[in-house]
Amino acid sequence: MSRTVILVRHAKTGDGEPDIDRALTPRGHADAAAIGRALAANDVTPDRVVVSPARRAQETWSDAARELPAGAAPAVVEDDRIYDNDEDLLLEIVRETPDDIDTLVLVGHNPSFGGLALRLGSPEVRRDGFPTAACAGFEITGSWAGFEPHAATPYWFVVARA
Image 1 (cartoon, rainbow, N blue to C red):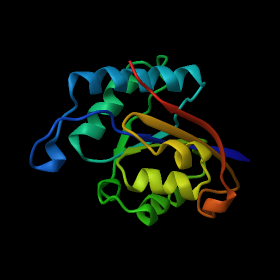
Image 2: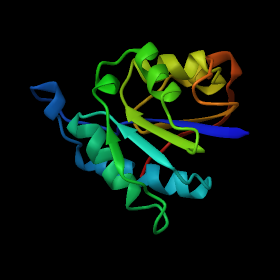
Image 3: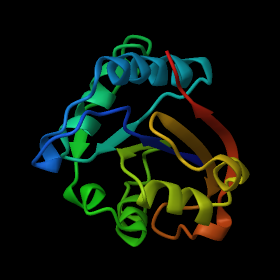
């Protein structure tokens, strides 16, 4: 069985402290909506969305979800491990995904998202990095629990800009 995992880096933010409360800029809100349009244009229909507790990640997904077709945005699961910014913790989240989920979307931060995209084999990330509002899609086979990075096939990469 083929499954899909999509990594979405939050859109452009302003400065501020504490870090977890940093909000999107007006450009960030526009780019986040462009993320949703890019997902819809590529027929991405998430079954599960796991988002960092950081305000910028929450706002990014909220804006993106409004651009998806009606009923295509499931309830959000918030997970502190995404904010911890560690690739191995992201892999834990993927491996804990229930097997009735076909498409998993993670919304979070660099450097862990760019690092994980590299581990999953994304040639675009090697070339261009993983900027704000970047999305990378990977196909995997087998169960989520048995997922290993070498088993991913990159199929989609976009930097969504309004």
